[in-house]
Image (cartoon, rainbow, N blue to C red; front, top):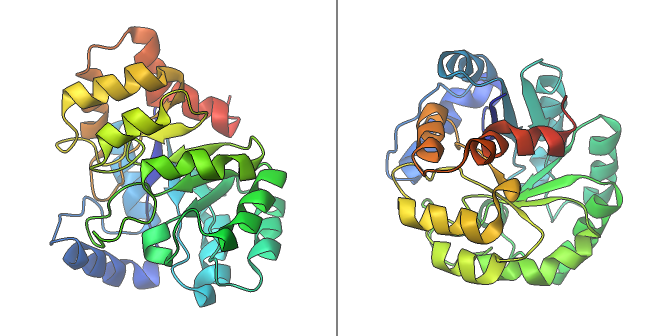
Amino acid sequence: MIVDFHAHCFPERIAKKVIINLSQQSGNIEAFHSGTVDSLRAQMRQMGVDISVVLNISTNPRQQTSVNNFAIETNSLPDIVSLGSVHPDSPDALGELERIKEAGLKGIKLHPDYQGFFADDKKMFPIYEKAGELGLITVFHAGVDIGIPEPVHCPPGVFKKILPYFGGAPVVAAHMGGYIMWKEAIRELEGVDIYLDTAYCFGNLPMIWASRIIESHGAEKILLGSDMPWSRTDNEILFIKSLGLSQDEEKMILGGNAARLLGIN
């Protein structure tokens, strides 16, 4: 089973606008699907992906309900697992976490850069504690965001400080623990109980650093991710297969770890 743990799509009425805006904001990078859930699923079939985990982000408090409504709707599709999101400035963030859990979503995505908070800001601790209490998976954008390069709101070193607030519930640091901050990811995250995903690594993360991160962190804590539509899942699969890993390690990274984490048989 191939599971892409880091993909994006948007409601059809806004997908085209969102793709254009995000592409321009990030230096006119190419999008590999049109932004809708149907176009993502079509690409999945072509690339041999069985399941994509769609990471939705509430970029302002007003969006929170509609973003999660979309997540709940798409989560009913057989090959999509959608995660919800809460905004730290929403007065109902904790209540929304309960709604997310009750709706059957497996977790949430937080993007400190887009949502305007530092990962170790004390105002976030009640949200982390609630997510942990509910047993939700929490995925963080980690490291640099090429559309909002400074300041970095979630560097790899911050996770040691915030992980205790989750009470042992799963946390994922996207982009191998910190995009363009991979040396720090090795130094700060070795031995830390956190998952890393491989999103947007193809063509960006040198193979030697990818191998060192997997070796230091353990293949059982690495999740295939693409960041679709911004990087093709099949390219990210080829990247993993180029690293000289054992067959068991490849199997874990390409889907086994994600299936276990998501409770998929």
